[in-house]
Length: 106
Image (cartoon, rainbow, N blue to C red; front, side, top):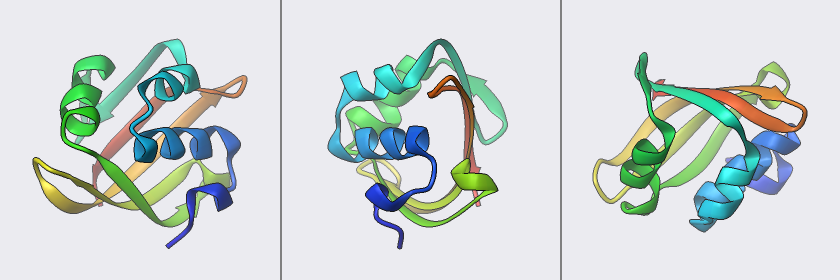
């Protein structure tokens, strides 16, 4: 497992740290104003998705590996709704913030 503070990309590091801390303000701060996302190939609205999958269900990311300069992760993701699952995450960044992320089962 890779501790969040040792992730290569500082923007992705901030995203993972915010998720694991349950810090919604830090999560929003790392996203661009018009950030987009997809979950298992379907585009989702970030706010309701994050509320369901992260905040109200105690989501947590344990990073197993990273590639593409830290912009691609394989994670054991767990929350109170779904339990634990292996997921892949891919991030697109602009000026130190995330403009898009995609997640899905790995």
